[in-house]
Length: 460
Ligand SMILES: [Zn+2]
Image (cartoon, rainbow, N blue to C red; front, side):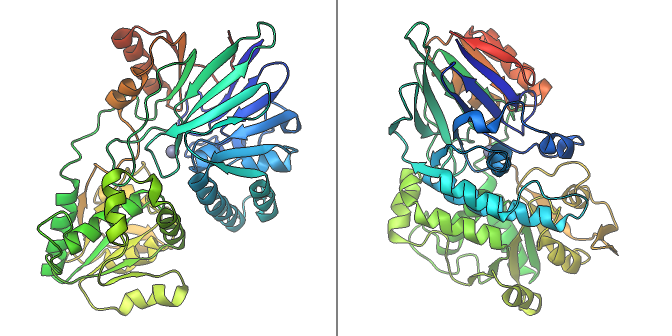
């Protein structure tokens, strides 16, 4: 008998963790941290509902921490098996997991969930594989990665599982997280035709994105305006993908590749700083894998360094970061974290927030109660590093940079399957999950269910 247990990521965007068992072997898809919820800490520290020592291997669909963040804990708790992902996912995961250790160690409320040694041990067990290659783990299971278009290295995963009782292979396909196709840099998500069972994410299962074609115009106009008034433009960014999307578009805005040839200074001169060690490392990983970009970006990457342009600087070390303070204006500063919950962005917000000549451009969702949200909502003063700061900065926002597929795209991806027996809607909050499930049932006439946490379902 083959079963799947939804140990996490059921009626929850984060904490993805799925255990598959065919009686001969057990394996996992995802092993993520629960994030952004009151019960998250409690949940993450709980023992797994299975013995990690009995798990043969693990598949990671992409490097976001809500998909990989508990892997070192599984290793610490006895998981000895191989971890499979694409090559970029492996690289990003090492950087992100070490950063997670750093964040946990600076939080003195409780002991870290795992330490650097657990991350290093995880990386020893980690194997990077190519998109499209069929990996035969053993006689029980094989799998193949296709593109998910979400962040570099993200994968849709096809898994074939032997049912030892019938001798039949059951095919399960999981979306991982699906991208907001078409993206600036990435390829579109791949469709899969055949599957017995489908797992589809529903982070934006009840939302439709705004038009994306105007996002570059908003960015260009913000840069132009700040140059004209010799101000400071601050962009809080998420380190993987969003930062590289913006850099790629700034590269085009400054060098004008998509216009009539390379006309330098078309928007005027502005110093641009990427002031985030994590985003810098993440940009370097992007540069290592141009073969996974979409055709247009790949073509440009052959002629040009797509993340570098005149007057651009990466400020990894402390001194060069602090020198941004005294650098002449106009200037543009990108720094993390994306919702201003920590990181170097706080120093820049502290310094530049009270001057209406400056501007902050939000390129991602700002969760309630975060500093980013308070600034966006025009709250003043706001508290940064224990001090009140007047919030008089001009606020703009652009919505088109989401890395997630919206409801129509999720439905479009599911419609690529010919006749699945069942679709499991996962990785969405309860309302979003049911909204997507209902559309799958009404529009596609497929059976769709929203599993509960720890529910076990028999696959046949
Ligand atoms: Zn993700």
